[in-house]
Image (tube, rainbow, N blue to C red; front, side, top):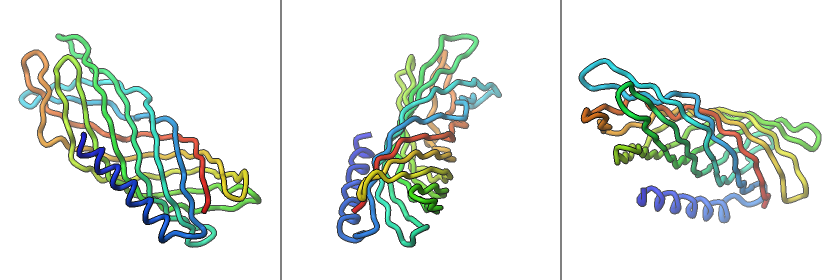
Amino acid sequence: MKLRHSLFLLVVLGVAGLASTAFGEGSYVALKAGIYSPSETFDVSNINVETTFDGNTDTGVDAEIAFGHYFLRTVVLELGAGYFKSKGTFDTETTESNDFEFNVIPIILSGKFMIPIGSVSPYGEVGIGAYFTSLDVSNNANSFSGTATFGIHAGAGINVPVSDTVFLGLEGRYIWAEPEFGGETIKINDTDYALDGFKLNGFTTTFVVGFVF
């Protein structure tokens, strides 16, 4: 994860530099914080026999820093980098519950389509992203790092100006992404189980504070 955190920091600094030199008027930086709600179960499938253990995932946290530029009054391109995480458990009939936690660093590009209505601006968005995922499993001393996974997202939100340079907003987004762990396995009851069917699919809901420059 050290490499990924370093990559995340470099991306943030690089995007910040790009924003400060190239975006100019009609640009903004936004800080987002909220929750991540997974909509998928966690599956561990036996390599040799057809046995599947389903697990439940809990609501986690989500944060992001994003830089956007208005190319038109109604069209915005936004580049963001962030962090979200969640945890859960999966059970078997022959062993105690196993807790797992996954941490994700997303780097995402979104197209936002604004609908100005008076002083407020509702919008829809679509985009793509690269998701760097790690997975930790308790009771097994297992920790896995997935490869960069490309996914898509779609969402909607609303921005409300509170001054000439500050706006507040609320944003909801749904993510589709399925990380890969290179054939890694989890040992349960002295048996190796393949990581299979793990998806990041879920909702993020964030409160937004934006600064126009």
